[in-house]
Image (spheres, rainbow, N blue to C red):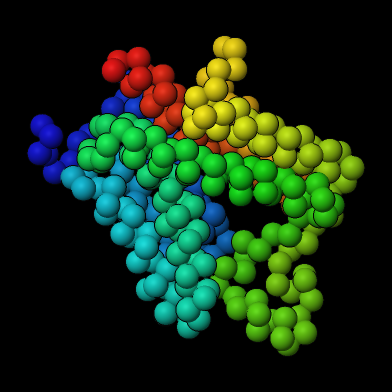
Length: 273
């Protein structure tokens, strides 16, 4: 069965099954975000391919999915006339950030993905990816809103050369959508920053440092940290007018992608060892 070209996705409620579906929802949300305003495109199809490779557990699908994410910025960047720096930055987000959280983090935690690396390497992949995601997405985004009192949405300028716009004297509103945050939004952003940093510190202390913090375990730290995603979901719907159900779906998918790998590696696998 291990040599099968693909496997049908499970439909139970085990951590591995839930992880597969969180992955699939994550990439379907990416499909939605890239096609909601402009319709389906070849670029949107990248996320369908990656989502199906992982959901159907295609043989060597993890490496195939990473390869697709790495190739997309180069192919579409060159087609759009992007400069090298823009392509490299795009690759960072596609491969390191998106691929790290939605592909490598689950693959390092769940042996069912077939990634043949040592347990020590698995542990440090999990620690590094979790730290990157919580630091940049959780704490970083919340701090930007809390500190500046505004939210700058540049999701519509993915294909724009912002340096050229600035050189031509373009205002902020021409490069990104600038939204002012109210007092309540700023307070929620500070709360999101606090839980992200606090949860990450608990995770690092227990997972990387081996520190005993009473009953707290690594997955408790991450469960606290991902509360920032739920606070951000409300903030983005309130500040930027985004659809709250979509933002809540993002928060749910991200929570699953963060908590389930940590729980499986540090609790399920360690107890079975």
